Length: 449
Image (cartoon, rainbow, N blue to C red):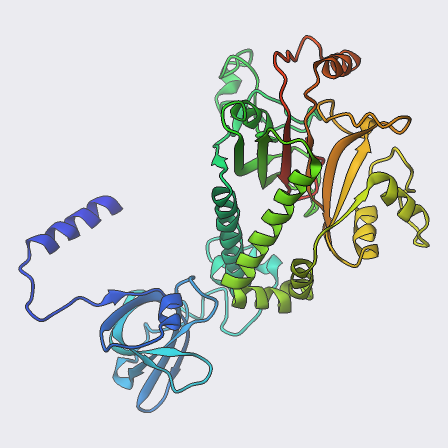
């Protein structure tokens, strides 16, 4: 319907004779209008939703926002434009001249020549009120409108910028983006935390599988990326993953987005850690640079203190400690942990947060974990009685584990021994030697593959 309407409008435009001396107004977003450095007297058009209305004797002031910016654009119009339809929540199209604003609070304002109400709104029945901060639980009741609020708008703009930054980092560093399947027969984690996919009509054919085999929502694209890394030396994916964990906490989500990458021909954890640190700092700097108002709002009302914490992390090189050193630090701590730290036992979130705080609230790489804690494919360090593997986790302030990865075991006899001990010899056939690393960026706290 939209495409047909748009095409008809374009045809009418093409068939009409151009009006001499009349140029249609340039369409600007609120963000671009506010950021304009000069005015050339040209007419512009801005579309959005009214955030506030203030009527004086001879002047009407509107603030409109289109989601491109936290700040709204002030529209100044003659009082003759005032009518009941220009109310909070209404969608409008404003044409006029962009001029320098005499107010110190904003750079530009729009002097209106024409205001068209695209969709009116009954402000008294609208669930959100101007200048009123609503709790997030209240906003959940209105999923079709909540994105208009400052808090949700800022979060979504930050997320959009972070997504773009992640893709930009990988592209600039020569990675190939791979779309790994969402529906798969693979159980990459092997932890029984899968959502099984079945047709809605399954009740009519209970003994059949739609794909002839059981299918699940993906928990990881790692296996698919490993195949791709046999043809491309650097690949990554960034998409939704699903875990059927019976948890309502923010750290164990049923659906979340995860970055995964595979790099061939890498021989040291140092190379892997450089990629991790580069990705973290690049994405963080781009968000802070391109979304300053949104970050400031989050800093004030959603996550106080996080902005300074991020800036502190960007100024310092990340630290590196071994798992053994981490356990010793925890044992010597005077803090009472819920889970007693012991060598050979996995680190819990409380341990990870303490380690970061102990190291000056700087991100910390913890390397060389016990072999028994990690999957069979991680490279054996051959380090005597402790027996560790070349694995690494990146711990960050306030979160704990954010990245996890390892070198891959490329030595055939090591793999044969581990597969035999795990009872996986017949399942996995390793036909060639290769050495890889992978890492994952978690949106919530999950054990890495």
